Length: 390
Image (cartoon, rainbow, N blue to C red; front, side, top):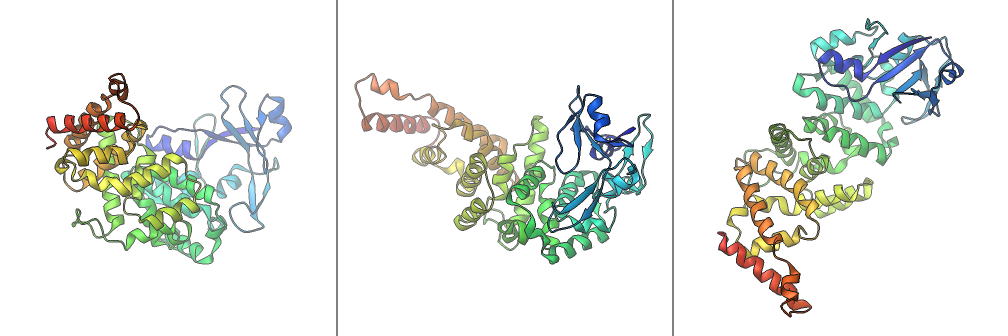
């Protein structure tokens, strides 16, 4: 029995990146061998085991044979005679088809290291086209590694176009499309994901609402951008820069809202019906498309309009909405050349003043029912006027 570190952990180690997960392949073994060592079996279609101490995944080496449509239509063979080279051949990209043995020696039968050095994303074999999910995965890896200079190999992009034309992408479930979208949103250059899917004809099939952004004009406030997607790309990059400066993790809900910035009500309804969005994602989409543009003119809002914006955002009852909305709106402001930090600081200053106005203050003074709400609103507007919102 031999154990090898494989896949993304090897790729990231060679790139000098921190690997989030480590996966292992085991050759020359059967399930009983690992169970005897205390591993817990969790796989269904093929045996995957959790290490008794680290709980990392160990899978028996396997091959796959296509026997149906979609990304689940495969027969797996995981006998002890399956070699590491055969297991690596079934993987998507050459840079994900490398392994390290227990001594740290690199096993690279499919040219992954050369492609890593050349910054090329290339499919391992023609079997790439048997799994439609790989179209989304390849676009996601391009988004993840774009800052390091990685590009799709033309042959791989042509194969993705062929797969999109085949109609197999319709077999992808909404849940899987959303998962890949979420992972892409956590990448530094998320817009690369949409652009590559657009170029190969896949975006119109899996996420058609985003396909429309390539032909939608950008906001009037952003005349330098050719389309809504062009603006979206710039805003996402501004958001990434802001996150790096503030040393915080990107908020994927905010980045999702940025992508939906120019959605119409019909597009938002369509996407909500298509994907199993969480409330946080759905809220971020609606807040960004309805109110992020107002932030570009926040300095010119008067006291009444400022109160109306805070109420529309529902920030008094749901203050957790503030952070993702401001991250998205601030990134938009930065992309159109405004001082985003100053704008967001001003927003927070006034919001904190308004949150200090408590209904119980007026209730204890004898006001009741609707009169309390009106008094709270009037007090907030008065505070805004005192602080420069005439």
